Image (spheres, rainbow, N blue to C red):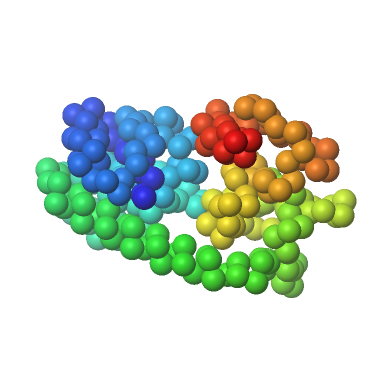
Length: 235
C-alpha cells in the first residue's frame, strides 16, 4: 500500500487525482490539499507526495527542496519544460497535465517498487536486532530492545535507552528511522515521538506512560492507529 498526499491549488485537479486513487487499490489517500501549509502535517506519514509544480504560495519544487526528508515525489504540471528540473530532485515520475488513469497508475507502480526495495533493505538492516549510527566520528550500536522511545529534534533525533540517563543524539529523521524499525515493535504516536510498544506502562487514547516514567502525548492524526493497536492488544 502506498500512502499518498495530493497537493494542488486547483480543486478540480485534486478531485481528478482522488478519483484516480479510488480506482487504484494500492493507493491510500492521507490528504488532498490546496496549500503546502495544509499538507505539511501529513507528509511525515506519507510514502509519496503527488504535487503540482505551479502553485501561487510556494512551488512544488520549492516545497520538496525545503523538506529535510521528503517522501517519494511525483510531480504534476501543465508545463513540459519543468521535467528536467523535476528529475534533478530525484522525482519518481513527472505527469504532464492532463494525464490519464494509466499514467497515474504507472507512476504509482514505480513508487511502490522503490518503496519495496527500500523496505527490504531496512528489514535486512535490523535482522541482527540492532541499528548502527554515526556520531562524533564513531559508530554507535543500539539494540532495539534497549530503546524506550525516540524524540525528534528538527534534523536530529534523541534515542532514549534503558539504563542510560543521557540520550544518544544523532543526525537522522524519525521517518527514516521508522523505515528501519519493525512495525510490530515500534509505533509513531506523535510528530515528535516514536515509542517501543514493549515499554508502555499505561496508555489512553491521548497519552502514554513509558517504563522509565516518561509521559508522552499521542498526536491527533496518530490516534486512530494507536487506538486500533490498543483494541487489538486488549482483545
